[in-house]
Amino acid sequence: MPNPTAAMLVIGDEILSGRTRDANMHHLAGELTKHGIDLKEVRVVSDDAPAITAAVKALSAAYDHLFTSGGIGPTHDDITADCIAAAFDTPIDVRDDARAILAAHYKRTGTELNESRLRMARIPDGASLIDNPISAAPGFSIGNCHVMAGVPTIFETMVASVLPTLTGGAPLLSQTLRIERGEGDIAGPLGQLAADFPDLSIGSYPFSHSGTFGANIVIRGHDGARLDAAMQALAAMFPDAIT
Amino acid sequence: MPNPTAAMLVIGDEILSGRTRDANMHHLAGELTKHGIDLKEVRVVSDDAPAITAAVKALSAAYDHLFTSGGIGPTHDDITADCIAAAFDTPIDVRDDARAILAAHYKRTGTELNESRLRMARIPDGASLIDNPISAAPGFSIGNCHVMAGVPTIFETMVASVLPTLTGGAPLLSQTLRIERGEGDIAGPLGQLAADFPDLSIGSYPFSHSGTFGANIVIRGHDGARLDAAMQALAAMFPDAIT
Image (tube, rainbow over all chains, first blue to last red; front, side, top):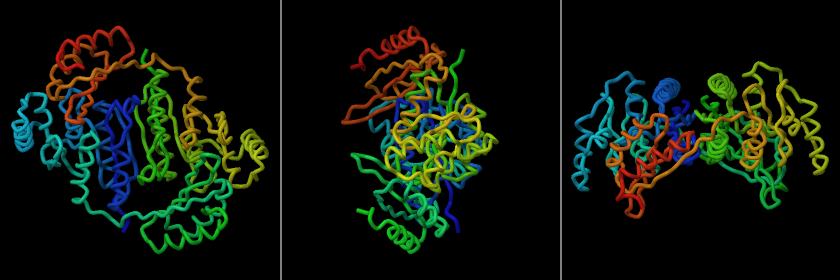
């Protein structure tokens, strides 16, 4: 059975303007791979309601799971929850369970639960909450869509709570061989290897530094024995270029 | 007149599996902002021909410019050029001008221009070449689509050759104010500021480290005087929380 598929939607002007370097995509990609869910597509859009809603509709329809990052804080530019509700055609308002979580947190820290903070308790009808042990304001899951904070530490804890609840497939295994030979010399034999092992994904990632150049060949698949066989065949092709 | 818009398409299994952390998106985002072109959307797809072709069609139709990164090397998984040709419904084959560039480069370095390397001279009809001073194999522009290498150093030099040929708008200016106050306290006044300055984009990016917390408020726009006015209004709102 093929693995479940997933997409990610990163929401935020700060990524598209170059102010902030996104870190969540790389983290989620690695965690999904370990969990046996194949990340097939990522989109980054700005804090623009039609863009967010359209992307949520397209990606949640095309893949088994959709993970979003960003736009669920207390400020005027945090519009993700409302866009998700619109995409799933569901009412949204401050929900009692989320309000109670925020009220307890702010009481503990001696902070006022004002109108802005209360925005973070806006949760679509029918969604289940995702715990936020760092700053309390919850994420949520609705349908196949998991809505999480953009702050990397919070995003990572939310991913850690959500992933165990999802059925994964066989984790994607990978083996890497560093070959100190021009990629153009590797390409021919590598194409033959790819043809011989059609069940594996074989990628070539060239490097060049300090006068040494070559490529890291990464073989990925779900069957460890097949990976071993392909890796041995590859190593036999370049006996002199492996250090 | 509004700025030209752009999208980026990052192509590569290695990003989606979490093996490689993409660096090109952040670089391009910053360069486009400086050049007055608004990056509106980024997509990341795998080395899968239908996915690449569909994304190229959608993004080149929706935005003024499309920049792609990755998949133009010599190996079997480098299928970007063929997918671009398919998306633009244009024939593709080894082209004499690109072959001459490769032949000269490999002659200089004493390397054989074999069949695999010759794949890098496959250029769609009607495309213009983008110079690659690092490893010779050119990128290309066709229609509104600029096709570049995924290796960051090469990607960056290609962006540097392409951008001056494109008409930009007013560069997006930004000013940042660090406010040491909970984002929930900032949100109310900030929403009022956003309403007072509808021509500016105002974002709030919370931070928390070593016991200090607050938010960086970033105001972006094309008119420096408006930015100054908004920044002064913002500073007046939080006189005690600015260090």
